[in-house]
Length: 339
Image (cartoon, rainbow, N blue to C red):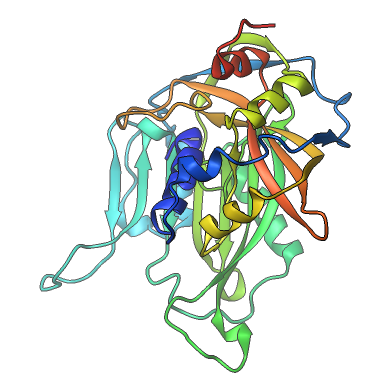
């Protein structure tokens, strides 16, 4: 899924499953409209301008990458596909009389620059002897090299733990673990790709998870060929503030959050918003625009994640927002002339 489309759909999707008479637009219209916005986040370390990149798709993975991926997935018996613009799938072995859809365990999707593997039943079989974070990191970098990813353009982003989906009320919580992994994010100009979770979902880079005794339970890489397209000036604090007040930013739901609507109602009562950190990221697509079809995004553009404190007077709450970071995009969203 495209990153900017993902951000917009997360926001809308959270509203669609929450109860309450107010609509998402009605709630959003009250967020930080009149509350003072204070900046404590340093911005002097931000670049003065950012590059927009153009993607060249489909991404045709070469034979070495494909062969090494097949070996990492222990699927040598299935053969080695040739480089192609066509999609390639290896289904799980289910036997001739299996009823229902057959899961795919290995796939190559050149149109989305993606290659991935999921071990059969990888989220239902508890893992024992899960490797340490140090061992996970070491193997991740080794396997990234086997897939011909440039280590100079990767950065370790986050570890993650997967819990088994079929175990409930286990006395020992460790028996719920089905794997643990790490996400290595791709970087452009030293700036990482954004992911809405710790596993690198919708981001370019390399993610790999291990089970018992370093058994590979899954891996996924997304890596498109890109070239610099246009250079745009960085948005000012005032432009970002104007976007917040004009509701051109996105409040990020928390992972696993069950009532996003309730939190929006609470945030609408904030008396002050203090921005404590700003982090630039790259993502696919154009900020604020949702693709109307399944065509891969043509551009990779930067945006900002803001960490802020919403002050209610007697209490406060941490909030994360996604905002434009290009002056030209802020002007487009606000309907003003570019600065």
